[in-house]
Image 1 (cartoon, one colour):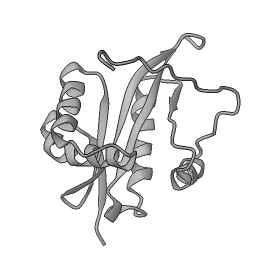
Image 2 (cartoon, rainbow, N blue to C red):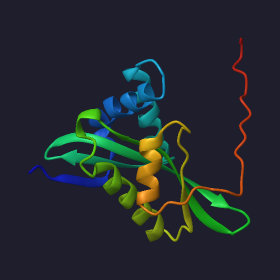
Image 3 (tube, one colour):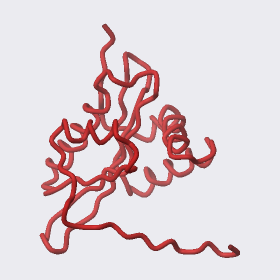
Length: 154
């Protein structure tokens, strides 16, 4: 039986993370762009703007999650946004996603955060089942709104 391990990623993991991140973006309907994925992750590492965890099955990178730090003004406390969670299609249903989520929560807890939040597509029922089985609660109090800032020239 192959072993799945999860650890905090470092800049030296960029080459293994970038194809997974590109796959994640493709899952959500974006065109593949490995160079842009690499640049994006590199900038997050170089500016200390996110924390990534990487999952391996034996020595092969199979998944990742990315946390973004934030704060709750009402609670006067640190929170994290689990913005990205992805496991390669061939490695799913082996527990990697659960281990990645647990590592993210453990990390947030170690820094005194009061909450980790995430969102997923309303149609992503498999992910919703995973989150609920891990004890995550769906928000019934708040609606989420977005304002898209137009890009110059569009």
